[in-house]
Image (cartoon, rainbow, N blue to C red; front, side, top):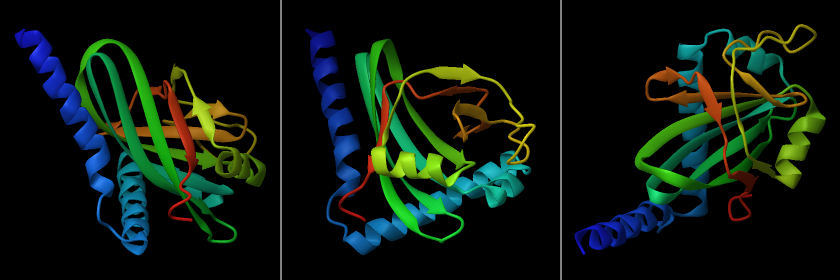
Length: 188
């Protein structure tokens, strides 16, 4: 009985933690919060991987997300928000992230993800079509042809590199299991 009650309480907490942050804020407040969070994410990346600054500046654009997830026993999930920034036009597009996990485990994670788009086409595909992302990779990679150094990043698609940060700095293992990225219709 105690295990059952603990599971019910933890599931309720998961639902509240995922749903509560978006309540009672105006559109402008949510947009400002997303932009501020993206700037904090970039600052953390530049501190952990200084070469990323030149890489992002030379790219077509980038996406920066702040994410939160929780896993309790057999299921888990997470959510996040972020922006896509077009370096040429300076346009900001507001995005969301949702994550679903299955498998045995327990824990809470807070992490930040940065995508660097080498081409406008790759960036537009991310913004307009969203992504369903499933998989993981462990590597530090460097693109020899264009875009500069991607040390500490993993190529997740042609022309798209991903950095992932934890509270301890640059993640060595980058994951995106059961994760969907899509436009935030309420903020755009």
